Image 1 (tube, rainbow, N blue to C red):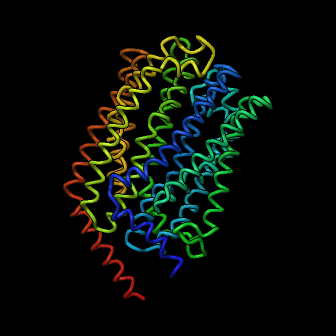
Image 2: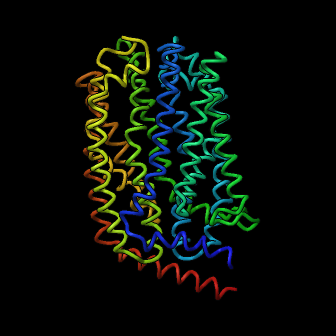
Image 3: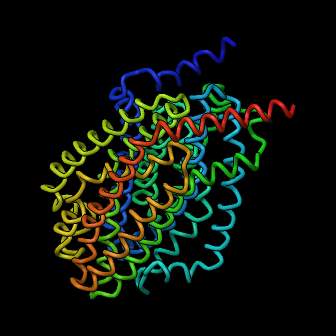
Length: 472
């Protein structure tokens, strides 16, 4: 008993400490980790663009959807398990929280094998599908042949990061993300600048860095530092739990998987314009900068999710409302500060990625357009995870697909058809504004009905427990 008390007390703070303090405490580590990871992406592309060339940068940008897909697969059990772990800890059920690990690994492995085998068997077709040209396809193939089989390490690191967040360990989650990203930058410099391995070096650096993050994760769990117990009971897969994890992780899996498809669609649209390889390279740069710019919103959403899930399990509904308005306010302020910093230096940012005039001349203005709606993006992110935190998967699926897939594709096709390549860049802020209104609607609905939903779920959970006890 003495060993379990501090673990329980650590989770208890999610139900008692001031909400602003918890949001700050739990959002800063993943936010900083994502910033470091984004800086890695920026440095990675800067190495490739300046040392190898813009064709290589374009090939790397075309292959980017494969990395998004690996993240999506890791988030499927990661965020689904995050909700289960947080609600279980809120209900003082550490045994059920620990069982998430084995079921999550069982979900991850077959999905990885299927995607990797299919990707390697149809590698040439995959690179063409991603929008490469004859000049850039060899670089994309060279990158994917290493990234695809190494993707399992990325998936494991992403899954572990979310489970650490679920038990109120944002610092540990930061070590997993930031440690891997820093290692990546160091290995990039070694493999590309010193060994001269080019795109192969960039891919190898990514895989090895994620491997180091997974080794740290394994050490942390096996050392007994986690609130989750690693034993035979925890590692056995359970079909019912797997179904719940998949259902809850499906929204983020869909949005990340769809984001991968959206990138492919945009790559193919950009490839149709004169100088298409340059526009695809620019789109890769824009995505790298967006990873950095979205860090505050992702950090706040990742802090909101376990806080709302824990208090939902503990039936503290006013705390959930408090988390909603404070998260939205913090995200709006963060977005305003972000554009105040990034818009004036957009030209300088673009210059980091290649030699002068290698990218399209309107590159800096395109970046400003994509970033201009950042102050409203945070509300969209909080709204996207709001239902998921309460264990309500399908409303999250509907909301996230509408926000980030349907709306974006409608605007990309319509605006690019009307205004050409500038329509592609303007589709991003227009989508952000539409998604913000959808997110506000979801949060308003939750504000009104969270008490009713929570009591109904509690009665159902207690009823199921009583039936189970009677059956024994």
